[in-house]
Image (cartoon, rainbow, N blue to C red):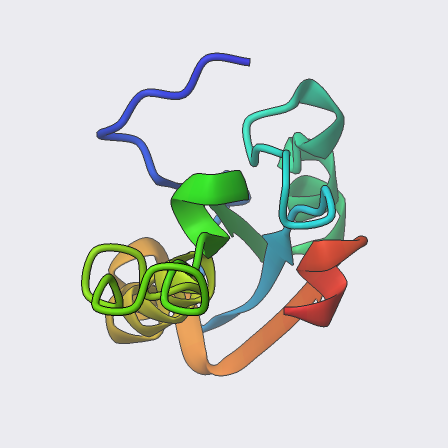
Length: 122
């Protein structure tokens, strides 16, 4: 699926939103090699409407762009490819969601992570 670089976080919010809803945060899997939060199978509109929760997901770098680490084979390249930047992406997205939860009707104290494959082990 195609990903817009300006659309890194998606949230599905019930239509009759009251402030302070719980937030479920979906982290997609793919063994840290592939994956995307934009796949149709991950569409959370129904879950948010039925469960009266906000469902958020976000993109993070996978494969070499997210987890390449060169220092064992190329000493001195730690800054160019430090490894685990995909996890850094996740941490930044979670921080952003917590800091901005109230702006989209969520409660930053009621955030729950869930995922599959690599997303569940992040």
